[in-house]
Length: 435
Image 1 (tube, rainbow, N blue to C red):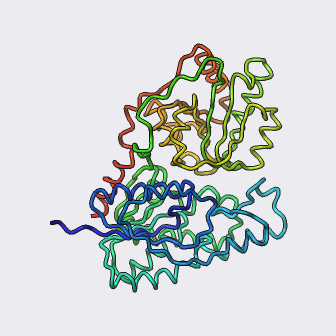
Image 2: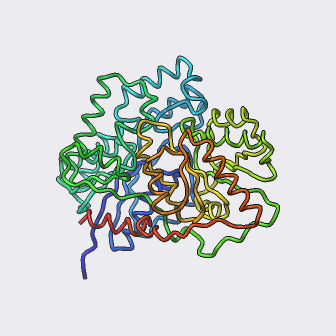
Image 3: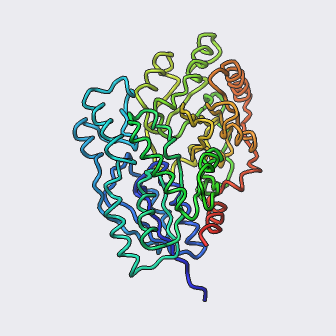
């Protein structure tokens, strides 16, 4: 009988934590265990997370060992000072962005950027390295995977790799020094140099580096990487219903659905302005079209909706458990995808786009021309991308969709090119770099 292979995963996000940071490795572990791997997950026992989703626990395979350890992080103090219920990796103003930051908040933001490097979980690095080096002496594993952000996880892996020689794969779900929210952090030149040096050391010392986009791959190619591989995010075929959704009854509005948090950088101003014009021209109203936003919504988004007079056409639904998302997506007429306005927007490929693909519903993306998202939608024939200046194109597209909807025709996409974007396929890709 072949001996089972053992993998140590170091991750900040793990169920019952919710949000997009959990999905990649929760699903990867699910399929690696089926392929014969023994997996130990090293994760904080008391993380400062923005949301919980206990429904994700059902995807944790039987036999996975959870190795929880207490973490001390400054996020709790930040919330106490500012009265926040939650904060994210960027420690940004949750509502309104920089314009609404007070003196205390700007000070704490500066401290976060320049004292807690590379991120707010850095105080977990040294105690984790000490603990894991001792633990591995009595619990040997063949390979270790670190996944970030937060990129402190990679520094834990670097320390353990240096001391034990364990094979190390560094998985980047998002960029490091070029991550989108860094544009809002007041880094000093010295801090920026430290972050760049940390990134270089991780990318060059890891035996394998995996990334989720071609843009990230090109960025890291400047380093002396031992092995660099793109393994996309994806969707779990077991999450999605296998039966076709029924055509909505006549007289129901065209439903445009967005699933996920919407921050100020993701605010689809183009869509709001197009809907405002269509309404003013008498071509659409709340009875004929509804935009439904599921997830946290920044105050700047709410203000833009109000400024365009769309409060009755845009409905804020709040967050829902992940296990309810597939049916939600499959029941929509159109799916809205918004790419952050950031220097790296060309290479952003959000995890949600793949679940959008799995629903076989048409996607309208607010994304730059020539971006990886635009390329993916074209390749899979699953939707259209509209850049900031594409007002007339988006207007024409929505009118066509409205006309089809009024005729009782339901849009669909074939999904013929989706096989490489399944979680099971990606787990097989990871196996190739783990052994």
